[in-house]
Image (cartoon, rainbow, N blue to C red; front, top):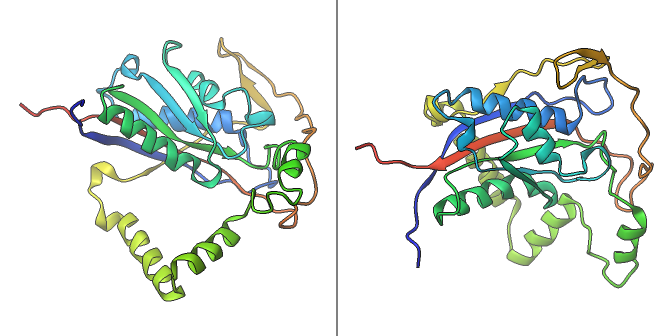
Length: 249
């Protein structure tokens, strides 16, 4: 049995959160993901990007403009070496959290030493649920709970495990207190990562600025959902760098 090693987070950043359909520049997940990766690396000046073995990004809607392995595109946009592999993980709302767990487990078991993990999302540009023939074929009555929103899931879990509203509120308050700046050392606090970009132009691989082409409508867009009305979520990215804890001696 391999020896369990210790994985630590050496950098944690997030981008600003942009409102959906409010003209947020650079709202595509692949571009914001690149900004997040760059920002996380900037906080660890002693880390050689060539040490990064994998980039794992979560994305709840990895279709349309967020398809084609968005983690790989974000990795290259951040300037990471092409040799660094990348993969996109979809576990809906817990996608980003899942990538951090996966990265930590790999490091702990000796599969890697440095991994970039996090989440990137722009539901304004996503496929809004993906191809509907697939979704509705699974929810045609034979599997009525195949897709549930977070609200219904929370209600089901509360009934199943007997969780009271008071217990849920106490847990939420404790979670927020753990995230407060006063409860964290300066080195481990999550920093906001500035994002400078334009909605009218972009820079190509050679750094030349060119007009940004008009956005193409997604063929998967729809106006309503089986469970809720036309709800949209913002653009946001959070990235962490995990590495093996090394001896101080």
